[in-house]
Image (cartoon, rainbow, N blue to C red; front, side, top):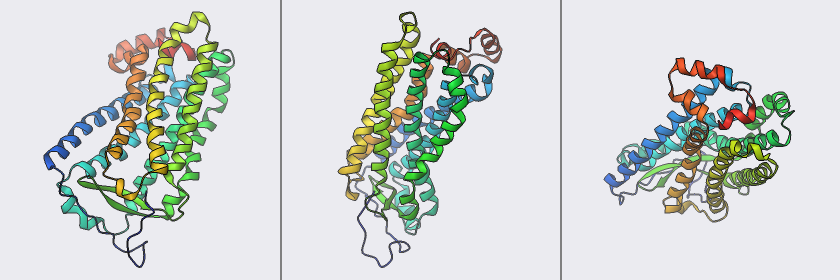
Length: 326
């Protein structure tokens, strides 16, 4: 996100030319686009499958489980990010033949793409908050096994509302700033000129991601230490999933530090920018994959026939800690 301002009279309304970098090999860039779109679409499918299973197909199994309710909201966040930062961003960045064709149409203020940019950053913060709630949920399941369900049942609608409302405190600078298309690799993608120089969106995100990572490490450590010996095999899979997701958050923190303190408007085509996409993809595509792998019941509900699912659902216990890892 840029402090750089081109030489123009009115930054809010004057056209900003898009310079297409024609030095990139079209075939290689389109190949990058194709490879990424394949796993992005796969990620959208898997998140949608998990979401549909939890909220509709097997609602009677998961509706009383606070962890899976939170995870379904996380799937919604993943789908939103994969559509905006995945399908839209990769198309304009890597499908280079469109740059010379469309460049002239993106010189004026971009209201539609400002909404996309706002949605992307808003949902990214939501995802950090959801990570906090997910690991906190697992920890309370171990520390307060008797009252865990009632605690979360009473507070769940409030914490989910907070997940969507809190990021608004970080959206305002994009809302009042000029969004424009910046040359990125052989294509282009959105950036913005900060109206308020200190209110960097990347720094806002860094704060929330560090909080999420801290909660992840602390809550996981407490969960493992306090977990009854007889339950360790049951919860081991969940803890492994937490560690894997934590690795993704660690990489995300590193990239956010770069964007917060070292990024300049000329770096949009640097390799670091491309690698930051991969860290984001690891979280959004990897999250449902990890959960499907560690939860046999969820895996069965997603991939087995409807009749088998109905039979299995009747046999399942609805205990929060147990149903996750079976």
